[in-house]
Length: 235
Image 1: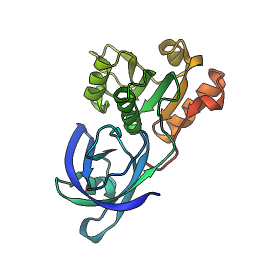
Image 2: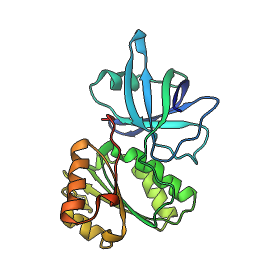
Image 3: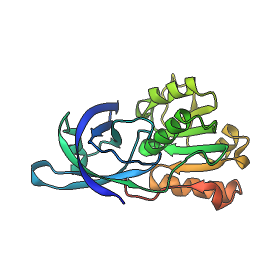
Image 4: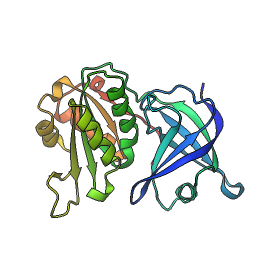
């Protein structure tokens, strides 16, 4: 059962201009599954701020837990932005069924913005466990500067030839060589000619998740059983 534990900040990592990863440590890190999430409780100045955030490291990356968040004007984000090494916070984990443990031969990830965090965990897990899964990630952002974990995914793509990544930008600059626009049925068909053979894992803003589910069932004519999502207030 999930339980609250006190942890200390081990490292703060800037992922983009407005996204940070916080790595925390405690003596008895419990088992979690790739893709699960945690409750994070910050208590600056005797206040209490809470969010549900995905675990962005893989269970195979031992010795710490990592969560990642886009910084906004919320009180929680402001408190998180002030965290430094050795600061204390409270977490409760693990939660969630948006997981992957090698069950399928071919999968596709559809993600937008900070929804990439549990996917980063799962892809790293797939590679480290040598599942041999055929993975295709379609990742949508506004600009090139908004792409979180880009260096991580570039390295994973180099070491794992069954990982393909398509970056989609809605506001691309003139030097961008990749795809532009939004993820729609035609783009999915272009990127995934074998889409009928894949299971789809979707994570992003709630509106995007709803839209992607509709595209997969209504436009691509796939069954709901081909779709995996997670519902929690992590945005």
